[in-house]
Length: 246
View 1 (tube, rainbow, N blue to C red):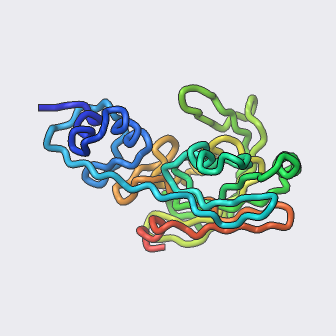
View 2 (spheres, helix red, strand yellow; view 1 turned 45 degrees about the horizontal axis):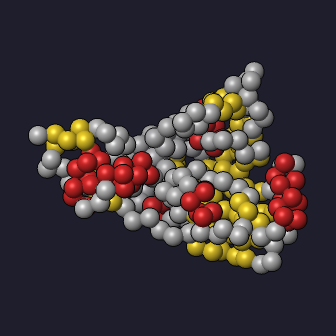
């Protein structure tokens, strides 16, 4: 007998169908080490599911003007923002991207910070694990067009796209995978993911633009360092990054 995945998960975990579907949509449910992607897909009743526990956002720093957190994977930016209702979100990270996320504590600081972002004066450094042997620094200066829908999708588009610059630096190679440092200007939707795919080095675990693998259930992209005004914030690399020997 076969049944829809979310219904089987609900039965096994004694949770509602709605809650089961939410967990699958978040990307935290795996079967035999592979992330379960389609909540309505048919599966055998004997299927065994595993649910990854979602960590809480950890506060890195705060003062009278700014609150900075280390965002875990599997929470979107607005879910993290719900934990800090009196703060104003300054930058967003994709759901499966972890790392530095900032909030303004007052409107005056928010306006000043937004101006810094708009003028590309905020330093944003990421670390990623990509498919392929990356051994030489690469600058990608390709405009990006984002198509909004139920889920956003972006692509390189030299005619309609907005300016986007990404620089990738080699860190380490292990087999046919590489750990890289990525520094971006601008900050278009899915910029790093699209530029890495464009360059031929898709991010491991990126189900939309990259290459899924059985060892991990998340996208291997982490916002490691951010500098704004006189501040510098760092978020330690998650333990998933060590699965590949890096």
